[in-house]
Amino acid sequence: MNIGFKSLSKLIAYFLIKLSNLPMPGHWRWHLLKHAGVKFRIPTNKRHFVYVGDDVKWDTAYPEEIEIGNNCHITTGCVLLTHLLSVSGNGEVTWSRGHIKLEDNVFLGAHTVITKSVTLGNGCVIGAGSVVTKDIPPHEMWAGVPAKFIKKIQ
Image (cartoon, rainbow, N blue to C red; front, side):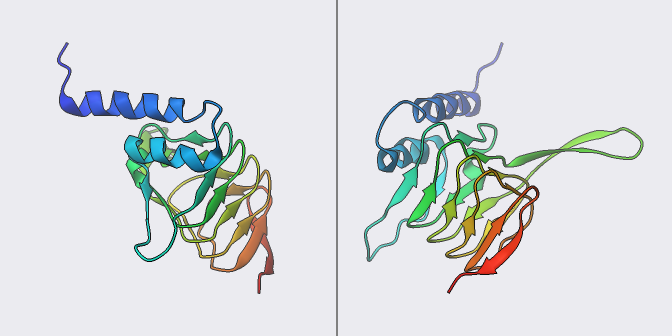
């Protein structure tokens, strides 16, 4: 069996993501996740704050495809998936991967699922238990399965 550096780094990233689910203050979790490959856009001129709640599931296959902005709140039980299984009409199964981008001041309610390649705009709010499958514009509230527009946020 040939174990290369790339597979070792994936293994380390997997354990760091699992370690981030241990009890600790939510604003500390982002340090472990950053070392696992999740990208955090750290501003140069102001304080960086990201809250990550308990039992958040990060895609361990491609954590480097997740980008989190400043002042984001990812509450308990959220799931962020960067890979997608597609089945064609003739039964062929293909895997694809996409990029998840949370811009600044995003709030994800409890048990929200983010799938596919999506961008959540600056200041948007996603209701608890929602499934987000498409891009969300800035300053809007969305909720439901699949997530639908609720209202504009001033």
